[in-house]
Length: 570
Image (cartoon, rainbow, N blue to C red):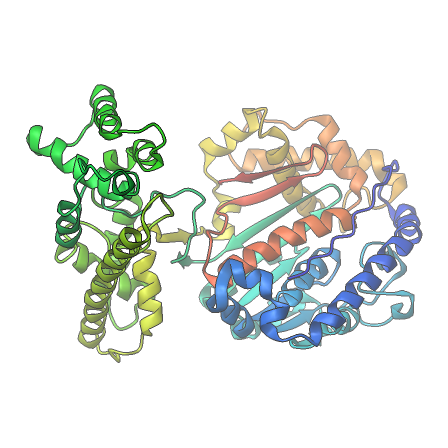
């Protein structure tokens, strides 16, 4: 996947009003043209390549299953200014299935300075048509079409239009349209993501009723080795190992898994079946392992000491997995999703065959070991994982039959992936945009307003909403016309204070500098900011479509003044 971001360093003028946009157009044009040429040249060479070669790097991240999900997805983009174009560009290069660009505006001279998907020859033409043609050239495997219509009109007059898409990406919408579109997409069970850039700030927000993630791929997660709760076959295999052997080669090539299982078993026998819990006991346990080492260069015993914390980990399932198992959705019926059917089967497995544990993942990390012992140990873990999978698979079939669905409707590969990642399942639920706008979590809002670390982020959040109120009242955004700057600053301040009062934050204020800065932007979309916000938005779209990695929950705010990004949970 290729992502080209053209970032140009520039000095900020006194305003981002009408005259400034023309100056930016002339300044950026040469830089953006150079980026365009590089991007097109590279994309043409990739177009000729086989899919596995073209998408080689990203296949290593989300695999063929994730890539297949992308290639089947249908994306609708509302407004193809720089923020929307940058978002869609990343997805087109990644091999998304089809795109529909909705925009009713024509290409103006101001667009030449912040959107390299249009050129001087595009002036006066439908912007959706020009952007769509450019994106199609980047990757001709993607099906692309455009609709010359203003998104607000489509939202008002044809809400059923959005039900055909996998994801709707809504950029540069004002608050009222966001609320309406959110209702439409929730009713149609269509994933929705909002993105907006505004001067040196911007935001991204996901809105989905529920999003389940099987392959959450956390950065840090404890290996599933069952050192403190070995199954019978692992116990038997461990018993065949003699840690006191006189064979020095065998002694220094015994895998740390076997060392720890054996030492944990010996400790439990002498401590009423309990494993180390206190700091003193854990230190004593490590000393016992160290005492078994007979030579200073025995790396396997060093690994055993370093990995001893895995023995001390609590048995059973995590609190997060327990919450999922106890969720009301785990009581399935004919309308339940495949995910919740598998959760129901997992719950039965843990309560019965699993003995309180989730299915074994079936992999072991690298470690110092003889080849024979490592392979035998690997086979042992794989056999246990396969046995657990077969039990869960049968329970899935039984549940499907019970609720009146085809017992074979969930593919074996999906159930196998579910079992492998059972300990890492995640369910994300997002509150409706209208609920956040009208009734945010007041303690969180007040905390952000008084916390120096978050004050700018929440200030931008309030002002991004305040400029929409300003626009509704005065039919223009603050700072769009240079001559009205002082009046706009006063009006925006009054609007922001009114909004804070409506949210229950009586007495809270925003800094004069931040209000002045917001007016200075004049609602301009800067390419550098749009590229960043679009990059974040496209990343979250990929998470949603592939159902891999956990998408962000909350409103993502980009602060271009301090070069910071923060997530607000409201």
